[in-house]
Amino acid sequence: MQIDLSNRVIVVTGGSEGIGAAIAKMAAAYGAKVAIFSRDEGQMQAVVDEIRLNQGCAIWAVADVSDSQQVADAFKKVVGEYGRVDGVVANAGINGVWAPIDELTPEEWRNTIDVNLTGTYLSIHHAVPLLRAGGGGSIVVVSSINGTRTFSNEGASAYASSKAGQYALGGGKGVGHRFD
Image (tube, rainbow, N blue to C red; front, side, top):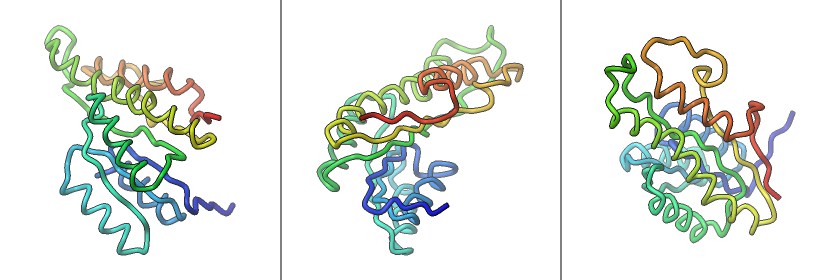
């Protein structure tokens, strides 16, 4: 199967390391113009530099995905640079604190839910109007086995709940959505 993402604009949240960085690099290798969102400027710049070194096209924008205004501003930067958005990989997430539910503080719970679930919602919320304006596009939500079929990991209450919420938000089929 030949994958051709030439001139597609793909946003990857959490694109500064791990799975997100690998997705960003792969999308660029297949011809996409990539934009990565993260909180860490240095790590984002390193990923962008590697993509550019391999003749890819990439930019970054600082965005804490749990902050609606930062996400909106990051998307504005992408549209300002590339003119549109064709796809989003909602990948940003944290492990949070894993602890027995009675030891997990409300702040620890909230932080994990805010980044993993609310951050996914905000990424989709701000992307859909742009995808529609451009004639359509795709959204892929990256969840976890801890939110789709393994719920017995001790201490993973907030993490598993946030990942199960992502799975439901993404349609629950293990695939992304296309918005026309």
